[in-house]
Image 1 (cartoon, rainbow, N blue to C red):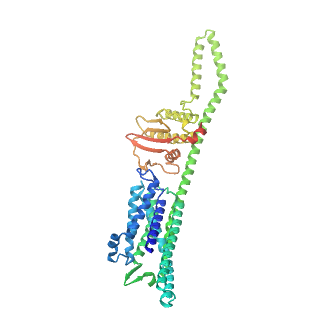
Image 2 (cartoon, one colour):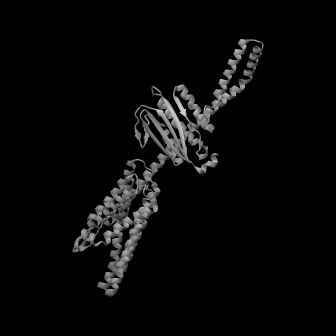
Image 3 (cartoon, rainbow, N blue to C red):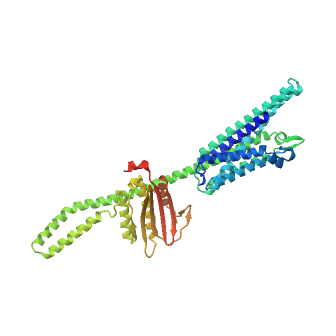
Amino acid sequence: MKEQIYFCMDIAEYMMFGAMLSWFLKDMPAARFWRDRKILSVLMCLQYAAVRMAFSYSGLLKRFLYGDEMFIVNSRQSIVPVLASMTVTLLAGFLFYARNRMRLLSLVTAFYALYELIRFALYPLAVKSITQVTGYYNRLFWEEDAIGAERYMQLVGRAEIIWNLSVFLMVFFALFFCIRKYRQYFGAGNLHKVYGEALLFVPALLGFVFTVMLRSILFYYDKEVYSLIERYVELNLMIPILAVLCIASILLSVKMLGEMEKEHEKRREAELYQSRAAELEAHVRDMESVNIQIRGMKHDMKHYIADVNALLAQAFSGDAAAEEEARRYVASMQTSLENLDLKYQTKNPVTDVILGRYFRLAAQRKIEFFTDFIYPYHLGIDVFDISVILNNGLDNAFEACETEEGRPYVSLSVKQKGNMFLLTIENAFSGTLTFNDGFPVSQKQGLGHGLGLKNIRGCAEKYFGRVKACQKGNSFCLTVMLQGRPDLMTENR
């Protein structure tokens, strides 16, 4: 009966800790062939439970590890099951999850380190408690003869079961608390640099190595059990303190790194808002310029009409020179009116003004400018986000063309299929670029440089899209893919 109880307890323990491991890894991106995340979580849980059960109940493995005794004779032998379980978990993670293996390594190491550290933090107290209970029953049976042998075995067996269950529950809830704090401090994890993941990995590895060292020296069996904490009683205090400090270092490191990432995100958002404010200011200046020209034309129109009437009167009287002058005067008025008209009709006044500004800029800098842009009003894409993409993308393209010799050009083209909107900006560029994380590194120094592509990427992510930048021969190409937002369609319409 006792064996069946322990078997059920072991299955429950390994399944619960396996489920906690799956929960800890739930934010890792799954490999493409794993469409159902629930199945993936179940598989991660089962692999953990299977490995631990194999080392606990497989006679072949126990004989291979422990010899003919079939049980642990020194604490060093207990290292192998832990390392084997951790190795299998990592291999399963490399198979089941995509990208960022350093992130997976740091998470798996943190899980096993926290699990082991919590056990060792509770170990002296747990050993002391079971020793006190069994010592009490030993006195009742051996010294005081107060209970019989059968009652003694029942009491000791019951105490062992209660003790094992209590230790399991304490470890489980302590590990649950630590993992919940880990996820709370850093969430899904937004670090894009390998060194950030390494900073999380190092304290976890340090804690895990500390537990491996303890397992290698904690006790050994030679006719009787020799325990390190019994020989050196101060270790009953030192081991829990060091284990708690290791746990604190793991959680504090992830908290510190999470706060740093949040601050970095706040700075990036502040820079983004600053950049967007500058773009809005430029748009307002463009609109003011057009409005001033219209007001000026309106103010002078009465004088133009009076002049035309006078010239026409002379022309009707037979003055050929006055007739020719009247023709030239009307043609000049028509040119002035055409200059007030927007060059591009994109189905949105904001994008009309933006492309008109770059058309004039192209004429000033002698850059060929081609575009077939039409604003996708029916996709629910905010015109302000489109303006961010156009302003930053075209500004970078025109700036790159300033140093180009031969035939500098900028081309803006769009394609649409269903709710997908693809915007491509191509410009002449014969220089050499350095790419980092898929984007060219700005050669300029100082605040604000390199923000253009970050702003574009921020807009693309808002619409579940992507940004791709590449250099092809003597040209640079920027492609932005956006998906329609049905929740914004009515608002924009």
